[in-house]
Image (cartoon, rainbow, N blue to C red; front, side, top):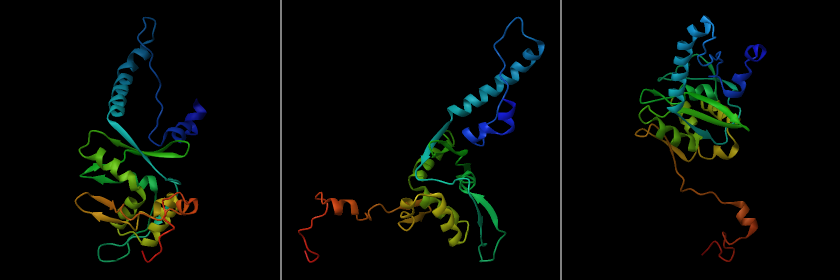
Length: 213
């Protein structure tokens, strides 16, 4: 157990917000004074953790990878002057996000089998709806998040191409910023040609009609 704590194994498995605490057993007439003294503090921690868990939701982030890879972000101020270069990873960028004054992502972590999820507050006004809509097109959302911070576009492309699967990148050019929603909206009406359907000739594509029809 000491080695596991020292090597931070729990953090690797359960995320960076994980910590260990010594359990205090139920009351017993034979218990020592040390255990009796420790119990109220332990119970208070358990109540707070329980309340936090009951108030937390999560949303899976499709196609996310390399969330801990760090990037040098080149930025400018409002008039185009270069600002200090900072280093951030995808999960750090997400955990800095705020909406209506509230922190959006309490934690972003891998939950197993390469699946990444963002954890958010269920009780902060508007956060649940915002988070659930944001993850639908997370790649496009991150583009606009960084663009609004005046991050160099080449840098943004480096972040997105390394942290999202290629099929997610198509949504960037089909998106625009919505001031009223506080996030990007994606035009889903521009359907791409499904080449699998073309080659399977399953009726989706009518080969009997020429381009002049």
